Length: 634
Image (cartoon, rainbow, N blue to C red):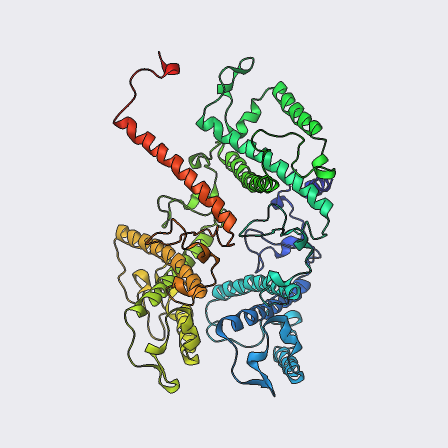
């Protein structure tokens, strides 16, 4: 009912059954679709209709307010994050109140002294007054113009300023969402970073010991279906989930089996051999009417024989269809629960799998999604670009380039190269100090020697304020003056302004005054290598941060990570040098011995089968039985 009303509405507005936006030229919302902040993939987004009156003054006021809220949210978000990473100010905030004693997050509001509140309100008032008391919202200034020019960011062409303001709006929107999420989890759990174990009153916890609650996610209900705590509703949804999972497992096998084992011999219907029924969605076009009747009749018979939802609303357990399958119905209660938990997990996987199969089948017309058949894909506009490398080819799983916009692709490629260069330098910054360090002092005034600065994340605690200032100033100088991307140049080929210090050109890898090869093939090969190495470095530095944070050591000394539940099994059979105990997916992180024992039994069994299979491959190359295999005899 909701859907058809919406269809009538968009059809009436646009004159098109599917509501082509380009046809609705009378919409007042279109007055603002070229404004800053209109970004793909959503475009101009105003679901509540604030701008439907088409008033430019109202739009300007709301834009000014949005920018201001975004700036406050960015500062607030950093206020949550920074104390966790860099620590707090030394000394006292007020008499008998050290900065170190002020908790992070909402709890800080309880200990801020009265004069602290006065200072904050006074500062906000001073900023508002110096900015013209809303002159950017109601007056002659542009939205966001507070009457002062920040260093580095106020220079540049009008186009550059527009691009920066669009980026600020986008980041501000993200920060507004982020800070609300932080407030929400802080308020619920009493912890700035939302420790789930502290939220004991959550109605979701009523079901966290149910079947289907599995590591690493635990009980997962992001849409809050179970927030009412109703056991009856939970039971109904669980039975529906199990049923959908079973159907999805059969459907997934229905895609896979005909490709591997072939199809039934003989006829499906008169004049229709099973061999002529295509795999995938195309089969729906050739199934005869009686085939549909059989499928619906079978589904109805299964529903009726199982009690018409008795496992959802009645006395049966979810998934109990009233019959006992051979082999699987025997065993202890614990064994049955383990099997049902496995079924739920496999069913979830199958539901994701079959939707993916439908999607690729529908896009490409092939049951297994042959990319070469999807000629209309906007992603193909970039499959000949730099960075497209075997074996993955053009890889964009999130569809960032699905709009086919060459300018947007160019911008993202420039960002990728820059991030890759920073990551390569960061990786070298982890590696080089292990072999050599600068002599002398990093900060003579503070008595900090280079040799005293630890490697890895702990260096951030030792670095003096002057060092941070140098980094930020240098990066800002490069960004706004010396190392800019000229749209006429290929991505990653940077150059500086003509005036001031004179033009500087950067060569390969962003090296100042480095080599700029004139040979197109050589330049392409070099940039491809840089992209690949940059991608590897981005993955590497995140891994280094992760192991550094876990172990407290730049190189992730395993012996330092004493809190790891994985260590419960590091003396088990199968732990061998040089890898040691290897569980990259964290299956054993719950430290459960029963689960480990079960997986070890499965591993041994699979290993034995695999050894026989391997021998079965090798032996026939050297020796075969004499005589005939009976059913293959001519």
